[in-house]
Image (cartoon, rainbow, N blue to C red; front, top):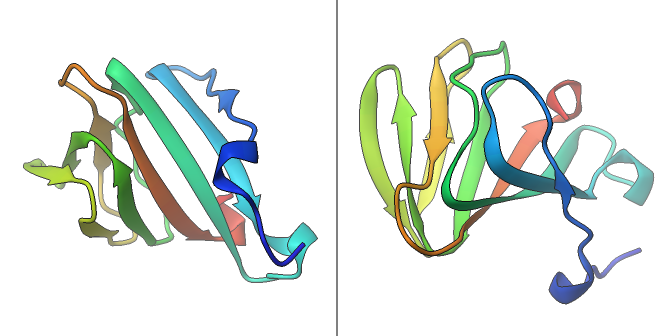
Amino acid sequence: MPVVKYNEIKMTPVSMTGVRDTSKANVIGAPEGWPEHTLRVFRLKPGGYTPKHQHDWEHVNYVVKGRGRLTIAGEAHEIRERDFAFVPPNTEHQFENPYDEEFEFICIVPNKGA
C-alpha cells in the first residue's frame, strides 16, 4: 500500500506499565515493504505520557499536532507542531502531554523497536 490516508489510521491504546492515555498505530513497516524501519503514530491525550525508558535503538520524531514535552537524559524540551526530535540509543526518554489539547507525533524506529 503506497499511500495511507491519515484519517484512516487505526489507533490502538498502549497498555503497559508507566503509560497513561496514549495510543499508537504502526502505519508503514515490513508488511508494507519497508523491511528495516517502522513509521508509527502516537497520540497522547491531555495528561497522557509514555513510560520513562531506554533501548538500544534510536528514533526520529516529527510532531503532527499539538505540543508536548520530550525529556531526554533528564533534560526536558517542549516540542510542538512541525518540530523534529532525535532520541539517541541507550538514552532514557519520555514523552508527556501536560497541555489541554491532544499531542500527536510520528516516530520512526528500526524494526527491532517496533
